[in-house]
Length: 396
Image 1 (cartoon, rainbow, N blue to C red):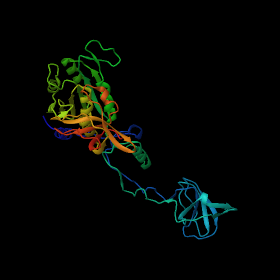
Image 2: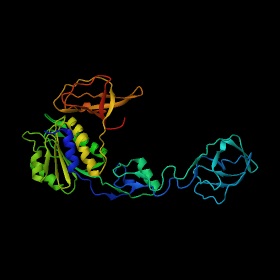
Image 3: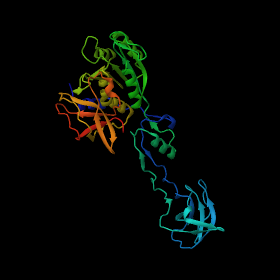
């Protein structure tokens, strides 16, 4: 049995990024950039007005200014501003030669082709060429996950087909004779399958896509055949259940039959101890313990890293210290524990609260979970008001 840190090190070592490919901006939300993007020109490319008003010389102390022209956005001025002159200008328009200040229109009075300032200050209201970025500046680095702001910047730069990671294709097989579809009424001894919904949601959230998802009960030959049928159509295979050592826990046997090399079979982790990780050439596989809370935790602390490695993304692993809002009933355990939690704003302060956790099969405790509380092996429960390390899964 290895530590979570050792497990994450093995995952990072054994998985390589998928080949990058160009894609259109419309298809790139949440994709990972695989090239550095630099400014191809100064930004802004020219001095431009930050306000509607009149362009004049900053040091021109004339009492009134003759209006000699008008400049709209998108037009290049064909005249120069001299002493005692000004030009009507609009936000975003190019500053004409000779002008070094824009008087906002609220601070002038226009009369008979002239303006008379009602007040003057040294504020220029001009966005200078290159004040945002200079030609050659690094604006986006490889490994950045592209959100709306990053996509807008790429559009501004004219980069319409940058190299990005393709979506990580995930094949997910759910085992368990007791499972029925969520829409079905469970019979005696049966429960509804929640892991398929949980996995599909988290895989999409992490930037992957479900290429195949099926329930195959506890039938080894059927699972083996379905996995073989999908061999060329996944980058990552997940099997829910079959990670332990019971008579119907045949995850390791499946991996051996498929030619995968197993790198670890247990982690000193609670919940999620019987997590199995394996690779076969460029593909990877996890056998995930079947309980929903074990799924939730292992998907965040291990499977997510695999998806990030395939995508060439920076690992989203940065615990922060947050005040604990309320004591919770944690008993020291020999395993490192990741307790589902809720981080939220309370009285203007970010605090964290442990969620109810009765067992690894208790789905009710995951409602509202947006964080995990790491608790070291054999450590006592923190007290109300303590600053505790928190792994944020989403920003509150």
